[in-house]
Length: 350
Image (cartoon, rainbow, N blue to C red; front, side, top):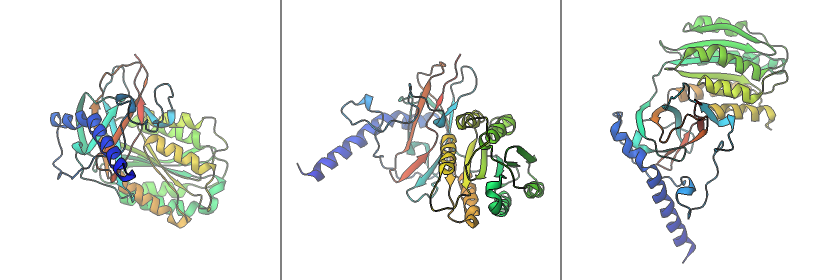
């Protein structure tokens, strides 16, 4: 048998297995409303589902936070005792990073805790869901020379992203957190708040993020797309809270964090790694401009993404309110597309 023939057989086996694992999810869409979007031509993804259902297949790379190896960097907790509904927010891009919209429920495969969902409640493309956005600008002394670009880009972002039902707030942080303007739809007030901020002092990034999600985002409840845009170099030299503490609070508040790095040096440092970890853990994304003048490009990309995401609400199978970690395996059936979402959640404990 030639190497080409072997690869073709192996690829066919992988495709057949993933279709089997995700088949019930595709069938489940018939019991829930389907958006009136044009059907997309789909192909089977090449990645395999969890290997214990088919021992003959090679093991895939383990997802972060598998049961017995829970990682707070990739999880969100379902609220409420006995709550079973899971709301999975995700973004779809092509290989070049372009956002893909207009897909339908049957274009995706889903496993929750390595099981097919019991029932799909709702599948929507949330391009118009009201936003609750927080702008957090690093005002520590380490970014003093870049601060003016941060302010200008933040104002431009708010002018573009805020619609009539959306609201935003503005904060600066160094060793302390400075809320200059609370939630409002008035861009003039937000602009004034941004320009009141002054750089200086150390950096308590983790403390600031923890407090912001607790005091601002957690109070907003559900029914909104909640996001924090944090412009910083990612350094922290003053916090009492740990990075994992801040991430858990963001997850509890159902808030995505988007980071725009102000480190434009050719080499990435620890601060860039911190920014990436926080963003990926909460379902957001980190941006790394090559010049400080390009900070506005990061804001524009975030605005586009916030209007180009999907929401999938479903009831997981064999759900137990025991505090255990449940992985989420969500993939587009068309291998040209990549899904970016959280990796799982902790069930509540009764």
